Figure 1 (cartoon, one colour):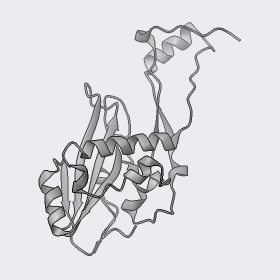
Figure 2 (figure 1 turned 180 degrees about the horizontal axis):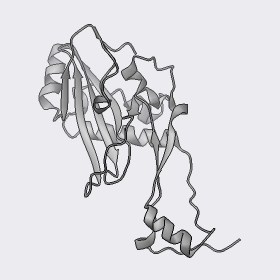
Figure 3 (figure 1 turned 90 degrees about the vertical axis):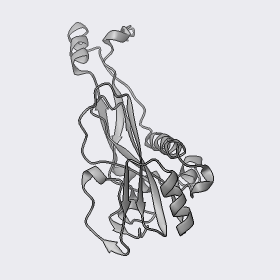
Length: 210
């Protein structure tokens, strides 16, 4: 077997593996028993120019290896989303729906985690992007984190349904404290088509059936 190739950092093609997902099952009104993670697909982001140069210099010897760990990847997103919401809210302000998934008590991470269907244009100079969103009514609201890792590349935008607050007083508290990018006040009851891709973090109907 040929020895490993030492590649200087400045020439490394930087292969990163992400998962492309559908919308979180909870947002589609599905029960926690519906696991859609088997439909998640792998997406590789690589510096094509550097990779082509390495292939020319070392034909047949440039390979990449990775481990397929969708559960670990999704749990990482849940942790990031939870921490994002905690930059505005205290842990006691809301019911953290994501915690059982982070701690491993709940296994179906596709119930609370999903992604935008389309890939947004790269944002040069932006390492990552985090946003906090809220939807609901005066009696019940949900807080959702949007996450984009390596925003300067063609990477997916994920959403994590982090938690909920119920009761007028709690909803008002969360609405006042949470620093949101988007806030959606929903009429109840309502049923509508799947929201546009830009609003991939919103539910397909209200109240949520799942």
